[in-house]
Length: 261
Image (cartoon, rainbow, N blue to C red; front, side, top):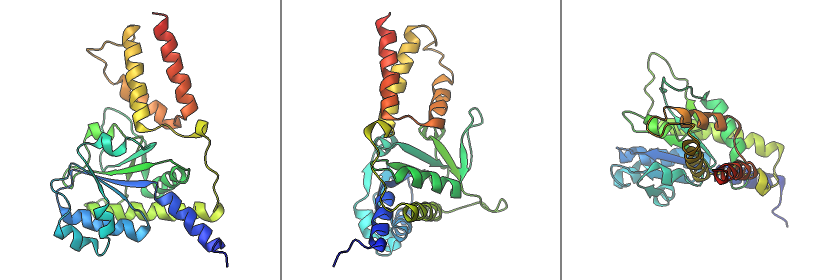
């Protein structure tokens, strides 16, 4: 008897989306929060956890708080810096209760952000990272600058303190809810062609380094005082996203400009 029932196809499609969502915890101080976050992830079907420069690695307290989600803890990737945690991700979303007043940010609520994340994660190889900052101070402006979008969980303004594991639970739920809706309407999503695949964070970093060099070469910017030009350009590109074929065109244009010098 075939196992290819509508229910199995739906679950397979759902799992395919959820496994492309990475929870990234940055410089977490309390190992219990790691365990509680792992539990929140497993309940919603997420499996990819990355720990960036944690104060200490998962211990007995983390295991106890994970409530049998130890497989998520044991398979967690531990890296020294944030760029290593998101290098293969096409979409990076940062959680923040504040914003840099100098630059405009695209801030979404948790429901809308869950839909955005699920949409990207449902495309094969489309890795999405959701960043959670330090318990006391969240993400730095430098870390937020690596994100295409920010998400704000609408809490009670009179008492907005939200435990990091609770924040993971809320966003994991919203992602599962949105992914389930997508899987229900299309249980067999066709893989994107290479030219439609979004570029990774590493690809974008390489492009902006190339762009900055060309702008310096043609005296468009002063390398000693670049101001906010590159961050503003990052926002510009983030609003539409860049496919691999589009990136090839942009890099080709920059190379052609360099050859004219």
